[in-house]
Every structure is written in structure tokens, then in C-alpha cells.
Image (cartoon, rainbow, N blue to C red; front, side):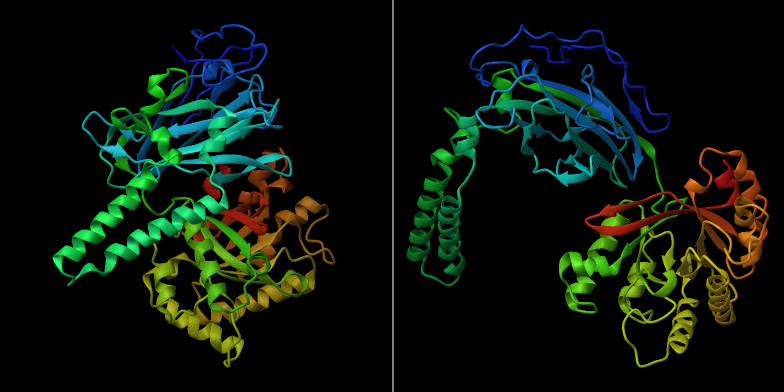
Length: 526
């Protein structure tokens, strides 16, 4: 049966290709049609999944909400350089309910490795990952990892569910066309109950398998007859576990069934064809446009229940750092003081700690924040601490990545004077130090211009030479692109000045996040 499409109740426009994004979609008129309306009790093991569930694909740039309407199912064709990630979404929407519970039903999602004609692979669980798109405050946002290579998803009546598919082309991946598929199969309640383990059953299996391990591990130096007896006993236990009804779905008369071949027997599944063309060039590890994200360390402490400065605290920060870095985002941690003064740092360890070089030398890190005062309590004074940190960091090749973020959006002359004083101190230690200042207006008690925008535009002149990276919020501009030119003309790129834009803020695992892509004036204008 050809499951290349879905019956549609309404006509929706085609999904256009994403320019430069390496994703291709088209309009396909050859959509398979359902066999007709379904009445009475529904057995999903006897009915094509295409008759029960709408399945279609959407680009990674789309917000696929619960009310997203179905479209025709197209094969997915992605393009990627080596050392690049491409993503796409698979949307699922039930046509009918076949479950006895409050859900419409459950579908099983399976995915295969992507293989090239020469035998090279992009392996599921390594290069290919699946995540479920979960709404946050009504907006599709969080990506929750799914089990691989097989997972099950409950569908809600009248709502669309999205699965986020990501493919990483490793640095050394041979170029070529890689093809595979994602198989979606509706499941019956009885199948689900047989596949779900209760706590008692899990404990029984755990004890039997652990006994096997205990039986075979201490065999070195044992007499041959004892080793043979232990091996026989272990084999008996393993055979009893493997051939139990729990795993009966993986066996046929000819032995175990490959998980990706299981549904080929019925032809009832929807098979989404997936291909990725890997180009013969490599994206550099260091992003050409630095993007930094700030994470509140106090929120991490509350969220994970760790004490500031404890081993668990360092571990939590390290996990956040590594997690964000894999997405080409340069993280920093922050802690607010009075009047929005902010302590920012990318590495919680001091500059003379081995971890410092490990963090700052990572080629994926495009920029790092240096703290103005000790991250943890120190016997040295703050000024002495900063001077020593700068002296050591300036001897490193990665110093060119460093910046200081001292104050979050100063509001009045007192705030601006504090920024200027701190920056002067830093530049006394290192004339080439870069200071980042965020702002959305000039000082309220001493306007720099007759109108708020004119005052805003003159902030760089007011902060010069104490700030090198000027960061403003995109909402200041609204849709007035003509205002960009006024801002850019105030910059002096010949003196190393750049501008960055605070694109958004969001909640990540209940963690405050600020996002600043740092760019030159030309980048900003273009």
C-alpha cells in the first residue's frame, strides 16, 4: 500500500522551501486516499495507519501548534555540510479515536539509520535524534528526547503533535546521499499493556540479570568444570528471560525479527522517506557570528537544589555549558546585584585552573565573559583578583574571545557613571579589554537628546571609550528599519566597536536566558 500522503478535509497551501536552510518540500497531488469513514470498534492492527492518523512534514522554522492543519505527506530531502545539523518536524494528528482511554490512541515511531550507496551510515541515536515538541505557555517550544530506535507517542483527540527530527553530519562524514525512513504505526491497547513493565516485573528481571552477572564474573582461576556449570546456569536464566512472553513480539518461527523489518510484514504503517545530502565541505567549529546566552546561576541553584560553590553546583554549570556549546551557542552565567549590576562569567573556575583553559580553548566557544569580581568568596580583594585574572588570561591565545559584561541596562547617570568607572579600571589593566553594555535608553535624569530615540542613539557616544560592544533590544526598533542606519552611523568599527542585539529572552528549564548575537555594523545593517 502506498502511504505517501494523507486524505485532506480542507485545502491548505504547500510548505515552501526554506531558502538556504537545506530543506526541500513540494506540493504532491498524488495523495493516497482513505478507504472511507470508519465506524464501530477499530482494531488498529487491521487498518492502515494512514486511515487513522494524518502524517505530514514541516520545516524546523515552523511553529507547529495543536491546531496545525494537515498537509500532504512529502518525502523529506535535507541538505547539510559536514559538521552541520539539519532538522525537520513530523506532524501527527488523529483522524479518529481507537483507544479505550482518554487519548485518541498511541502510535509507534521507528527510525532507521541513514545509509549511502557506498555503505556509510548516519546512525540512529548518534547522528539522528528524535524529540517531541512540547508547548510551554501555549507555544511549541521544549524538545523532549524520545527513545531510539523505537518510541511510542500518545495522540490527543483533535490536536496535532510534532516530532522534531535532527540529523548531525559529523566532521569526518563522507559526502553523498544518505537515505532512510521513519515508520509510524498505530498500536492497540492490548499491545501497549503487554509492552509496559510494572515495577514488580522490572525488579524481577533486574534480579535475574544481576544474578547472571554475579554468576559469570568471578570465574577467573576457577576449575574448568565449575566454569562450565556457571555458564550453563547463566544460559538457562538468560534463555528464560529472553524467551518470556514479554519479548515475544521480537520473534517469529525463524528467530528474532529486526525491529525495522517488523512492520514490513503488514504494510499498514506510514513510511516517511528521509534523505540527507552531505556536501563535500566542512563548516568551521567556531561560529562566524558569535551568539552568547546568559543563564542565571541562582535559578540553577534553585532548580537543581545545589548549594553555591559545592561540587554539585560546579557539575550543574558544567552540564549547562557543554549542552549549549553543542548548539554553537557560547554560554555565560550571571548573578544580579543592586540596581541591575550583574556578575557574569563563562567559567566558574579561576583563570589558573585547568578547567579554564579547557573551556576557553574549545573551538566551538566564540566568546567568553570574564567576571569583574570573584565568582566565589576569596581572600583577595576584588580589584586584586580581577587584575590577576586579566594578567593571566592576556597571555593566552583565547584572550581575543574575552569580554566583560558589567551592568544590565543602566537607567540613570549614577548607573552610567558606575559602568564608566568599572570599565576605566579594566582598561587600566588591559587597554584591549572589551566591555559589553546593554541599554534601551539614555540616562533618564540627563537626556542625551530631545526625544527618547535621539537620546537612545547617542548612548554609544556617551559611553565611548568605556564600551566596545553595544547591545540593544530588537523591540526598540520595532519594524522601523530606517532607524538602523541612525544607530550604525554612531559606531566606530575602526576602533573595534561592534553592536549586538538582544533577540529574545525565554525560560529554559525554569532558567533565565538572554541571547545576544554579536556582530559588526555591516552585519547589523545587512
